[in-house]
Image (tube, rainbow, N blue to C red; front, side, top):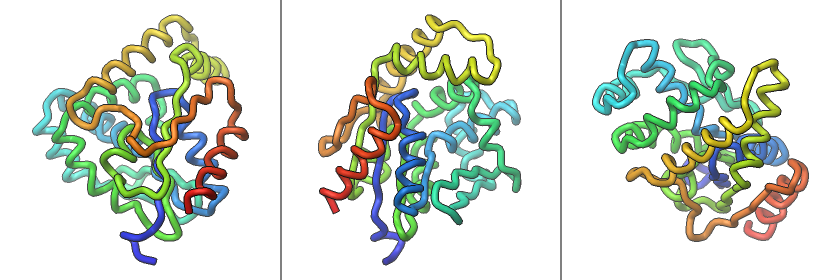
Length: 226
């Protein structure tokens, strides 16, 4: 099996749909690699802020992306380490501010083009589970199985609310609902790779499903597909 022929499962969906959690669990169950594409956009935004680059300066962001010393560590199933100058900063990329900044730079066509090759190089044997917003439509259009996870904006906001409360953050649920809806609008209306389900994707609304049930549905769909 070569890098080009390694099987791929893409799991796309809006913020808070659980695609990261489900993708990680599926990759671990299969013994495959895992790509959290959103972390790459978060990393670029993080680096841009640190270097005082405006988040709407497309040419400067593309130049930064070209010289970022980024590596994708995939030695174990489910590993999602993101390195910047040799330091794993994945934990620093999970803040609300990092997510909002990533969403701002993700609308820029040049940025998406600059990061495309890096993502595709994560396709390695024995297989890859990739989560994001355009994995099945742009990055891996030939994926063996494409899924699109979704849930209502309020359910997704409530999930984030619980996560933040559990780590001691003071948050307002209604503000989170508004943030989710605003991000959905921004992601789905951008000109470059807008958020949408691929024509051949299996759409799963997990508003009323738990993690185990959703993972089981994904694995069943894979079993039927390949």
